[in-house]
Amino acid sequence: MNRPEKILEIRRSLAAKQPSIGSWMQIPHASIAEIMGQAGYDWVAVDMEHGAVAVNQLPDLFRALELGGTLSLARLAGGGFKDCKQALDAGAGGVIVPMIESASQLIQVRDACRWPPAGKRGVGFSRANLFGKHFDAYCIEAQAPLLVAMIEHICAVENLDEILCVDGLDAIMIGPYDLSASMGQTAKFESSEFISAMDHILKLCSKHRISCGLHVVMPDVAILQQRIKEGYLFIAYSIDSVFLHQSVAKPQCPLS
Image (tube, rainbow, N blue to C red; front, side, top):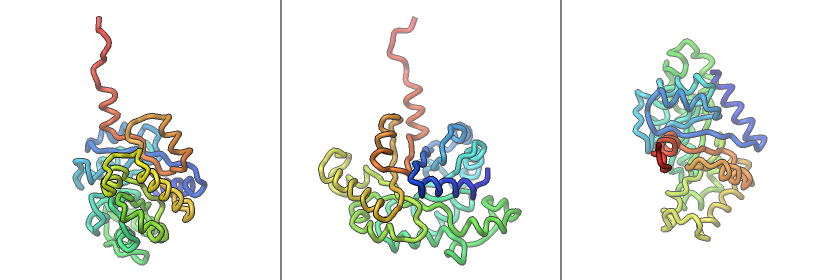
């Protein structure tokens, strides 16, 4: 798979206001990654925050996803230099960063993801550049990996105007559970306050021409289509574990 070209395709789609639909992985097994990679998604995020995924497992998971032409992303556990460097060195095409609450915080993450001169990430041989074989080409790619900020706290909503102005930000994703919890209304997604916050986020994203995204956790095409109509463009569709749950349940009908 040509990783830089895939990143460019996603950026072109978002710039044209066309949705980019990906999915999510929490189970660290290469066979699951291979199945997910062949499912037709633009990207699959490997969850290092809530999934049981270790750094040494990333190369095999990314290889398996790439067999199907699917871009590998890493949802980081945090936004420190080590988190960014290890995921990108393993071959991630970009990162999804949890709990971004300010522009200054996002700038630090962006710089931690980029090689100089664009950023401050350490330069070296790694799987991302085939341990030096593609070093020169990766020097270009490493100037601007895909960067997605998760908006998961009411403080982030209050600072969103400044966050969306950070150069290099490709999209945001709303974390509805954490966002609602920060408002004292955990999972109360029908409350007027939460709906107002969601509408405010969408309006600001439209103003700044930054794609807004979220996670459609339960696989439902009707809900996916509704979210696209509402203006969401960077969308994760379900999770490997949820796909498995929905398919593995014992049939309720009498068996003969």
